[in-house]
Image (tube, rainbow, N blue to C red; front, top):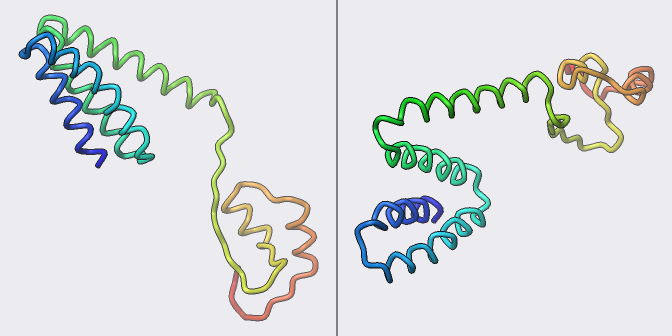
Length: 139
């Protein structure tokens, strides 16, 4: 559904200069609804597709003599933003690694937890002191 909305959106955008004024107004009224439709698909790949295709359509709409300066400016802004975000991130990143156990209260070993998450909590250290294994598997 989202892919079709993106295709319709950019088709309407490209068709816009070739139609009568009344149809242009209709296209301008429908295009925001298409963008909302893409947003409410809640599909990240569709959002990325909308942004990437928008960059392509935008690049094709820029006059040929301005394409290189516009591309260089966009690359500079994007590269600077990416570099700044990598050097000093605006928020902490968290990961969720799901593990399931048939018994309640199972806590991973400190060594494995440190490998996965880079740190351990006091609960991991306390659980390591009272380890009870029902199998011979390594953690």
